[in-house]
Amino acid sequence: MVEKEVGRVATPLEVIFIKRDYKDPSHPGDVRTAFQHDRDRILHSTAFRRLQYKTQVYMIHEGDMYRTRMTHTLEVAQIAKGLAQSLKADCDLTEAIAFAHDIGHTPFGHAGEKKLGELLKPFGIPFNHNIQSYRVLSRLEERYGPFSGLNLTYAVYEGILRHNTYFDEEEQIKRDITDDIRDKVLSYWDNKRPGIEAQIVNMADIIAYAVHDIEDALATGLIMWGDFREKIREKNIEFVDKLMREAGAKVQKAGQSKDWELKVRPRILARLMISILIRETAKQTKENISTLNSGDGKLYEEIRKLDSQVVTLPPPLETQVRTLVTEVLLDDVYKEPRVVLMEEKAKVILDLLFKTFLKQPKALHKNTQARWRRYKELTRTGELNLSKKKVLPTVIGDYISGMTDKYAMDLYQLLTQPYEKAL
Image 1: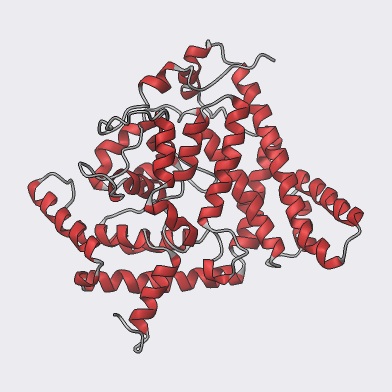
Image 2 (image 1 turned 60 degrees about the horizontal axis):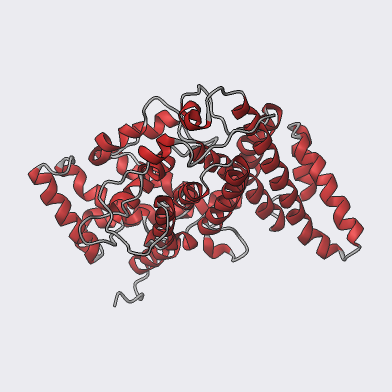
């Protein structure tokens, strides 16, 4: 098999997607590429730091052994970088997209996103974490004088906006674009597939949460090893069943205590799953690329014109992974009573915060009040495509979505406990 290289050699990547909304100031002696600049800007952003206190599946205060949105993001970036190296794609662009792909998530994970969407819906404002990631990085982060946002390249913005896994639909993401950015954002859907780096991050995200959510659930007793294996066999997820046997054999061979076996077994299973999923994705993707007839200079655009994505698992394995995520994890982990209870708690907190700020905007943080006044003026002059009735709920939605779990819970405590001091 002849392997074709993908990455900087592709002219469209250099010419089209390296553009920014604003001209960057020159940095004498700085040898970083455009995508390295993007990656570093995301890493240094306030929104990225807040991911360490945002829920992945389990609320951060439930225990420090669970993965957070930050650790998940770092794991996605590591898996994605490994795939990019194997496929000779642009590692810097891949890392930048991976670091930013979840930056628009609300506190309390998908339960928080769903609840905030319900609160904004009566005002005709949709909420989607992909769109919010773009809003954060292109507008809400304030680190430069002449403009808002981080001024990232279009390639990174495309990867963020078009990020999707088994739980996302591109058409729904497009419907969830907010009025104030609609004209600009729609241009990222050009009837073509996203670039290979964006596709790599999509696959890395699926691998990361499929494996690590299982590891967390097994390690903490949310689901028992025997029950999980029975479910795996019932759903014909053969590759996991095989790896569970292998993991069990490895811990028994070590001859350690029973407690040690129970602790280490999920970790070995996770390592084996990641290894095979990365290896099989790289192998299948190389085979997909080898069928294309374009020379290296045209390959990047050829990938974007395909009817289906080029970064894939082998079909039988992809079916098993999809079943694992959308049936086993969804039913036995994400809908486990203790997880559901945490989600209901999150909804109560966000409901109170949103309604309080809507009733009394002057309770908002001073910086958020300043944004509210600025948006009202921009709406009045027509510089911002936003109706008057949407200004305040839009600002509140941005404010709440940027909160960490801890900050949201602290505010809730302040509002509900009479002896909690506000000063």
